[in-house]
Amino acid sequence: MTEKTDMKDHRQNKKAEERRLVRHPFPPLYDENSKILILGSFPSVKSREMAFFYGHPQNRFWKLLSRLLEAPFPETVPERRAFLLAHGIALWDVIASCEIHGSSDASIRNAVPNDLRQILDHAQIRQIYVNGQTAGKLYRKYQEKPLREAYGDCAKAVVLPSTSPANAAWTMDRLMEAWRVIPEQL
Image 1 (tube, rainbow, N blue to C red):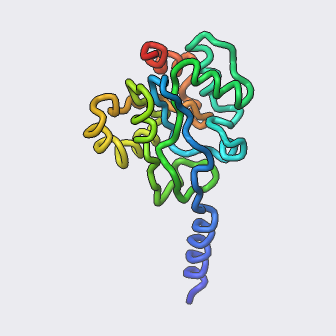
Image 2 (image 1 turned 180 degrees about the horizontal axis):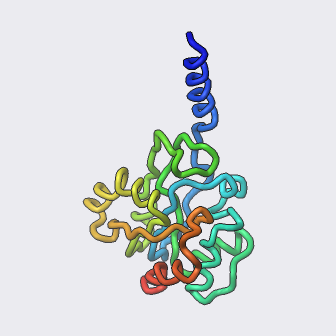
């Protein structure tokens, strides 16, 4: 083997080590009164650590929803649970398990989708929204067609711009305008 081949093998092995199989560590949030379902792609490292959705302090999800719904900002996980259920919002992610490097959606490989039927069978979901392009792409790839066949048009996902801090091109004002469809469905 040449030194060049050894370096290439080392880089490929390093990438494989960095990306590891991770299973979704917490269940969906919904109840029988949930009217809309918002799907992310897969929980970030921070969300996995706190065992709840949108745990990164710079993710604008909670700030955005509290402004849109004109409600106090939910600080703690119990407050966030209560906030969502009080407003008829169900939350989960498209992916149940995948190989991922850190929190990078771009690194997702070998994805296995979550079974969304458990929510759709027990809630009054009128519309599914996906938080960001990656979640939208994964939803369309793995779930939209069979769910639309089983549940009709409510399963046709509306893709909203990501609230992730990585989506810095979208200001809070632009996000508010795009996400304004949420309170209209509630």
